View 1 (cartoon, rainbow, N blue to C red):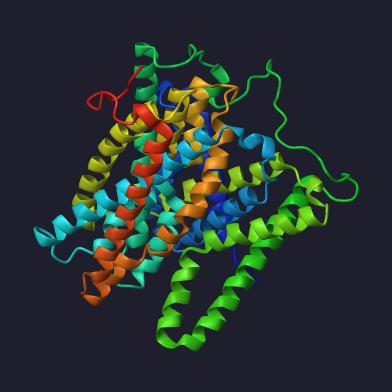
View 2: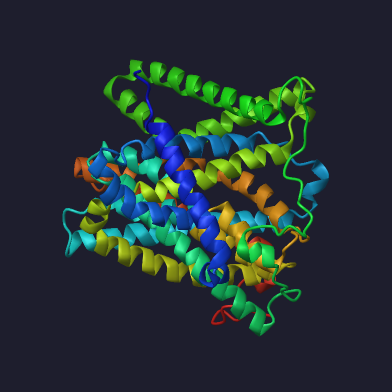
Length: 468
């Protein structure tokens, strides 16, 4: 029987690691104290297994990257298919705009910092270093492992060997900053009285499992009759269909760009590396059509969130397992320096901006923004849960609105992400300095937006990390 088993085997191995990580979180105080996501623990368990053990029996990492790529796109589709926020939700414009400004500022700050450090390496001790390594900082920290891998794989075709693994390594280090330093920030905020209310630790939140004497929360709602079609099948079907449509969209764009010759073909190849943008745009169009046909009420937001959550958990575990330690060893010094300095700057800038730009729930907003600026949405929500266990504040809702605005504003930034790799490929620094200029332009926009929202508090006590 000639069946293809590699995907099923990888899924089974990742599932076993996720379950084992869940047991470890339930038993080990260290993992509970720092709120380490189970997917992150599973990824680090799998990292040496996929690098040293499984290759001995013919099971390598070569398919894990494909899994990460597709799960990233699926997670974007599931979140983008959620219902648009009612107009009444937009009344806190300053908070939404402020959160978007802080998120976007980290893209710009991390890009400028990473590119600057990469340039210093290139003109001193590492003249052969690909300048695109600087952008793995915002890709791994502010965007996430899926984006870091997908775009990094595109760079490999442009002469940056191991770029996907470098991006994943940066993302893994970002997770460590999110968990360890994020929890430390919560403890500091609690001790100094920065929180709006006292933190009450939930045992279930620490262990990651809901005890039998607790009420089980409703994770999703049924919009189809079980006899006709299972609700999960129904929602998975719309996500899968949307993914097919996004594939056809990119296929059509690739065909049209082929008429532009070599430059068009190269652009088309780069677009496949940022498919998550086209997946999200396609999902937004599908949702728009469904709402116009008055069919939107058949789709449950919580069910779509579960599909996105499933995709992110498996993606994170697979992404860390897919890291090639051979390439990490090759680039260890730039990775260590860029991630360390980037982490320190993020620890300072996110609280500094947040303390002055927000009017309500300042610490709660800050801690979530720190989580998403070093990890992903899941780590941001995990940190927020420590200080807002039942999500009673408007922070998570405002972040969802802000992320939508940020996504639209960040499209030019992401479309320009290949410029430093192009600079190293061609030997011309013009694309590199163009990316520096684009990142600086984003930072200028963020500073102006910051001043408009923060007003008189814009530069209050500039030497203090947090102001009362």
